[in-house]
Amino acid sequence: MLVLFETPAGYALFKVLDEGKLEKVDDIIDAFSTQKKAGKIVTLQSFKKFKDTKEALLASDKLIKGKFPKVLKKFLEKNVINDEVQEKLAIADKKLGNLITTELGIECLQNKKIDELFRGIRGQINHLVEALTADELKSMTLGLAHGLSRYKLKFSTEKVDTMIIQAVSLIEDLDKELNNFMMRLREWYGWHFPELGKIVTDNLVYAKTVKAIGMKHKAAETDLTEVVPEEIVDKVKEAAEVSMGTEITETDEKFILNLADQIIELSAYREILNDYLKNRMKAIAPNLTTMVGELVGAKLIAHAGSLINLAKYPASTIQILGAEKALFRAMRTKHNTPKYGLIYQASLVGQSHAKVKGKISRTLAAKCSVCIRVDALGESENAEIGTECRSYIEKRLAFLESHIGQDLSSQNFKKGKPKTFAKPAGGTYNPESDLAVPVPKLSSTFVASKKKTVSDSPKPELEEEEAQHTKKKKVKA
Image (tube, rainbow, N blue to C red; front, side):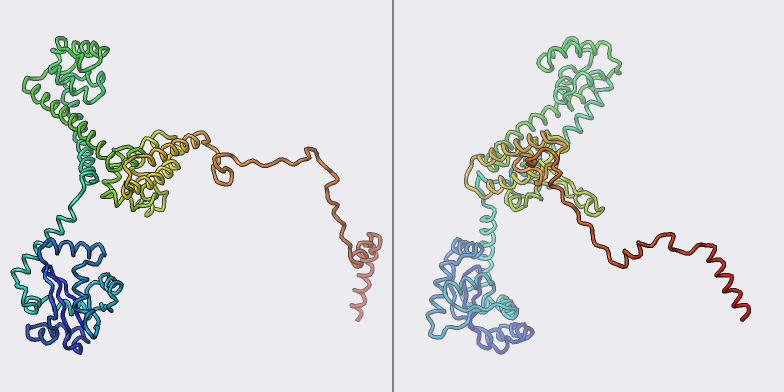
């Protein structure tokens, strides 16, 4: 029996000298405990050394992809097939064994005993292969490991969903921070100018207004036309003159304005990041972006981990993606499961009527599943399928909203039209079509019993006399 052993430095082919010691697993472990014992079990028959790390990387990459490397094929043809007596070949990987059997017709073996045999050879590889030193094997192992890692991390600049995941996660973090900062600014500046919060409702405009005014007594001299609309400028100045807020110092004003600056800068950065996310989503997932928008599509990709992982999910999973807690809680408490997750934030679901949100989210998830698989596995860069699916969803939404309160089951509706029934030809009642029910024949005993009348029965006075007569006879006896 021959043993094919793969190393980062090359391929080694060993010949088993004593197969009797391979019958028990414990015997194999003891047989390779020392160098001398290992030499009595296996011996090196041939060794093919790689020229450099690049050749080793290409051979390893083909094995990972399930392909047969040319270097290994030539090595086996030279050392196994050309021999007069073809022996069985022990291998460590079943997939590689199938390739060898299919391509070269060599019978391959793989079991637990062979696994222990490989462990023993691996422990004594430096002594069994004289052409391979320990330092050389270590350097080749390190170089191959780094090469494989770089190869796996290699990506295309056009198709990279990692950047989308990071961008959408940062946008969510920025939204939380902006909400916290804005709440703090409104509460802080509200002590000085509380009326401004009711006049200016937009957060970014409020921060810019605070930055422009500062203390409220400066509002009359400040030009606010570039910050707020003209109809609001007069309201702000009038409210500043009669404001009920407390006075603040210049130090307080300094820190309040610094907080407003932070909000304005973060808002500007969020807009730039949002534009970046739009461009990346149009390049990577154009069909999904057309269906649900770039923000919801990016959240779905981030929740799944990658676009490929999202393409593997069925439509039912995409529908409730993001509502896992509610799903498991409903399953545990035996209540109704949620109808939608992150897909609820899509405009098609949000603008629909409350009674059809569940149906339209199910349809949208099914179409999104098709678009995601086209984006992940297709080669086209346009959004034709996404446009077609979105038009279908819009028609479906219009149909459902126009039939709210009606039964839309498949029995009553077919292709969007209610099922109708043909009326009978005759509009009036036809008595001739009625069937006469035959009277059943009665038995003779039943008829005879019915012929008896009340007069046939004895009178009640005669019955009493007969009863007294029989009673007297019993007393005499």
